[in-house]
Image (cartoon, rainbow, N blue to C red; front, side, top):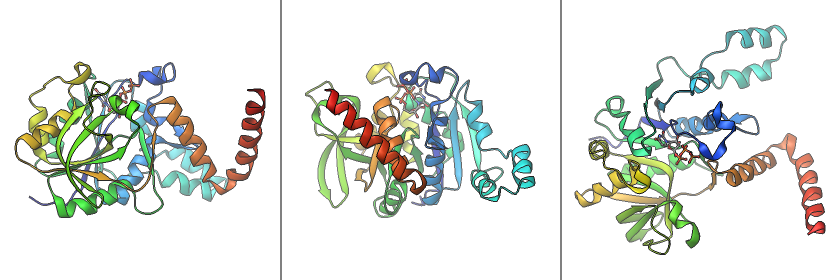
Length: 298
Ligand code: UTP
């Protein structure tokens, strides 16, 4: 089997309850960091890593996500007529080639593992990437997935992005039990999803980027329920190890923002705003003022 990764799954069928009431009518993935929806960052990262086929696992109420990647002829005409070329370029950069995106539905939010399983037939018999759009990873050089794709060419098997998290946060993540480490790679001997506080085998947590073999899809086909009564992707990857196949953790170079949580989303908004030359100075002055006033009052 080739180690070339050309397909990526974007699971976007979750209910996004942590962002209610907004997510009553807006998919979480369409929420913006400055002016770009979370899903755009995920797509750009995938393209930079050489992904050619984009598979979305969606659900009821996610129509605006599908529209987002379509051409917008009326808007295009209008910008063209008004000579707004810069905006036209920004708009055109979001277009995806016809046929590059496929959508499958997850009828019920039974868990991330189940969402991935829903894409089985579109993936076929080759390794594939998974990107969770609410984990946004900023990097100075190569994107997180690109780093992983390059490492994967050597390792094969399955690979998960990982980073260290504070001990008291470990129970919110999939946690790795590591055999040995070399450079950025950690050879995994077991994985546990959302360990009870104090029982975690390490503080190395799985972050939302994966490169997986089709065997993981077979494992998911067992529809085994795990933590929280959900069909967990972590469990299906852990089964790979017991079945004698390789799983590696990859300590990526970059800063990860948990945009599935309100605190992480706000932090990302500030960080990405400060990266924009046209916003930086004004935002900096505002932040200094507002933080100064808050600190003086406390
Ligand atoms: P989360 O655990 O963040 O769940 O899912 P959620 O529903 O999006 O958000 P909260 O916790 O209710 O606020 C992680 C990723 O897995 C997808 C989500 O869309 C998100 O990208 N997912 C989760 C599915 O596609 N289907 C599921 O059944 C569960």
